[in-house]
Length: 452
Image 1 (cartoon, rainbow, N blue to C red):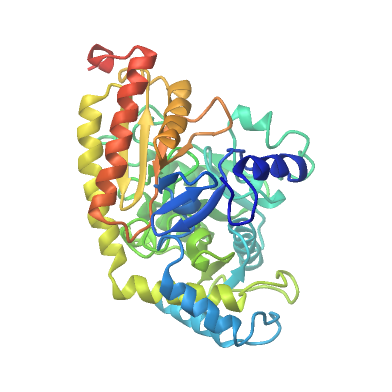
Image 2 (image 1 turned 90 degrees about the horizontal axis):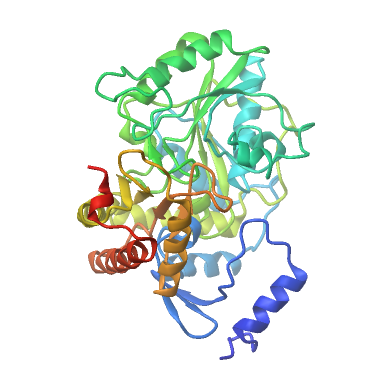
């Protein structure tokens, strides 16, 4: 079957293999058309997209109101250089700052990685220090500065970091929060949030050059889809205040109604000094940024910046996306649909011994697959099979954590558009349920494998 480009799916795959470098995985799926919650490949096969284009199109594909805003802006000015002012850029900055109490300014970027670098710049300028605390299983980007904050698993040293040691600067690493797999082997009801309190000890005793900031994802995404426990951010806020360092929330994946609030930190009674934004920020277009309070909003002239930051078309798309989210109460929809996912996945967990844990915060959802629920041994091979079996069945899901190059990764991700409907949630969970049944048959699981 020919695509609209006039080429078959096979031809597009061959051209891709011949002429492109693909550093972020390589699935031989050509997406020819996308609308709402569905995409269509070059052969005309339709798929439900449960990851909203890598959690970028939070309103689904080709939202007509966002498209109208884009066309309107293109017909006015398709580009404005950052040294000049533009209405979409100014109005978006005003809107986003006003949405985040305690924040005063927005620094625009292009990607989550360079936005995180912007936050690092501001933290270093404000404190005069140059080290950062990050979590063992964190992911904060792929630039030289941010890859140093990411990927501490040995498999990543042998892969993404090998040979880059000259540029991967030393940082202060602490165990991550994970109540299902506590790195301190403690229990949540008696741990007294030791993982958060340990951060202060490392700031005081584990740093050589002085810590400028603590960088944390409110819901650790690539580290295994793990939400911060209640109280964690409050402890970090107190620690950062005592030590005079910036609390930096990486919300590249969690903002824009994804977790049932516009920002995931809104779930916690603690305000960070900076919020790093990306992914869905541009309404489907490249866009990132850093929200910062007055204390840390300092940069030297020409220290940071990229020619296309605050692109007027992306700004127009972003502003319209936010307006739709507010008008239609999409944070509320994310909470309701997340609860619906949780009900389905809870029932699935009861039926399927492969499912070790289900973690839901709005529409940020991780399903951890294990070989045995008692030992919690990761089911890496099974998870990879489930990922591709879902694709064959017409369901696009993700896979992660704590690192994701093959064969690792035992957590299936659901991050659909935040305007998803109940019927689509039901369809996605139905396909996933069927695939797990097939997987357990293939790999020899039965109810006796539950380890309960």
